Length: 454
Image (cartoon, rainbow, N blue to C red; front, side):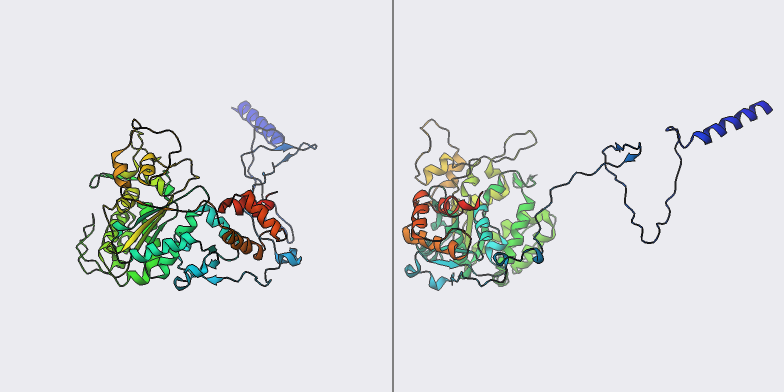
């Protein structure tokens, strides 16, 4: 026993002596308080290894620099007069007001009002219009002859059923269909209409929101998008919705019956409190505002052709879900086809010819009497459901090119707003107008703003 204890003492002494150099033995060290004025650097905690320095010591690996969001430079680093934010604004435009929208203001640029509850600020905008409004100091648009035609249709629709006013804006790519739909939306909002705007209908069918199957309606519900639509619809139309009440008893699953005479705002709040009730509540709200005759209703849908295209949603068997089997596109298609309607109001849509993911289907093309973009014949399959949903739609053709006075107003807006670095001249205007062949989008992006892309 004595010999064994002596051997254990020798082994323990050897281990203690080699603990500072052996890599197999780890010792615990405790943090000490840093001295006053001493800067303590935190060790790297990444997954990357460590480098060996020439002296043999271990050096922590440096973290890779990540690309962060663009942040504005401090004012002290922008002394040049070009970056002064308090420069006088030279873009002075007349306001977009219903009383001023006559043939007198054709080919003139009008600015949209700046309010917190403007429809395009709440509902959103198509991507190309959003970028233009961010470049300009004031959101504005040029009044065209087709704008007055659309406004005349809205004035006539304010006293008629929406079945008689289902209009689709057609025209080549970049001719201004989305701007025309936005002008109609602003006009109806200023005229005290109830407005519902879907700026990007492709988001309803591109499988970007959750969907659940509903056994009661045999459709796939989209609760997130329905919730967002209710929220935006209430914020834009709150003063008008407070004056309306339900006319019939409304049944909502897992919720007490909503009796007649309930304020419409309370019905909307049911869908906002529980996201699962949002699709049912949205359907009930549209039916209730369709019965009342106090306020006209405008349903405006951009990327209208996406409602008739194949969706990217898949069922449990990974089979493609038809667009009319989704709750939101089906609801819009019912109003676009006249199966459901508003007592007073209209349904306006705008086609997007630049979206190759959701092209214009043959059923909608034939309903609007548009030319075929590829050979079609009687043996090409048509879906009867889409033919029924497209029946009765009216076509309003948007001119493919701007007139010279309209293009001159667009040119003047961008030049006065100092968005184009070139010096304005008649030669520059005519050169850019000719290059774009009068196309509105090409005139701005490929003509006036082409010098900004280096």
